[in-house]
Length: 338
Image (tube, rainbow, N blue to C red; front, side, top):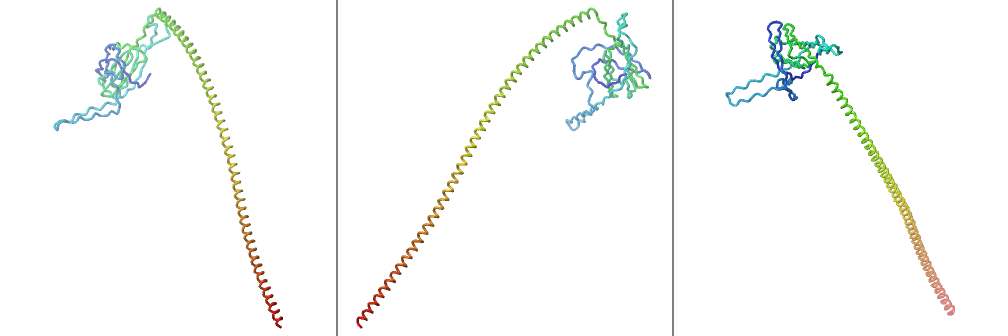
């Protein structure tokens, strides 16, 4: 038994089911082989399943006061996929199907019995569409919102299909005969296999040549990449050496500049020290000269003072001598007079 929920469809429509009693039987009409159509997301016979939450259409606006509002469109149904089972009935070998004595290991079921559970349906007439093709079964009921697009495991004979709806169990039973595959032509198959072998050998040779060519191209590309990588590495090494030499030169120039700055700073410091010493010596010399000058002035003043004192002393002594001489002369005169 196989259960699935897979909705995909493109079969041909067949008339619906018409119940006559509690257990109704409907013989399916032979379906016409549909013409191949280009693949598309939706076909006119099988519209795509609409989404559950569809937006309602807007109401048309009235053109005049007496116009009535348009009726709302019915809401889109919420599709449900019914449960189903597929039963293999009977068994047939490919030897029996091809009327051959030798038996084959592969065996196929003789019929497929598909039971579809439809608990909400009361009659087969509520199924709007029931379509059976060689590979699929399509069931759709707008009233009960059922939608089933079932792909069959084996190709079937859609000309000999039957369907029964059990009202009590609410189960739709579809019986279809399995179509055996066509008997292969051994001679044509052998020729085809020989051609396939030759084509395979040719393709293998072509693939080997292409592989050898790809290997050669890959080797050449790898050699070219290695050469480019080697050249790039050499260029990088050369650029690195040039960068190192340039950096070394810059370091040497920087060291030279630093040495020059250091020497200049030392010369400036020596010159500043010499200037300070000279300034100090000059100031000391000026102080000494000033002290000597002041000492000379003091000595000159002292000499002038001494000379003035000496002169005054001499004047006093002269005055004293003159006075003494005058007194002596006066005494002599008096003596003479006496």
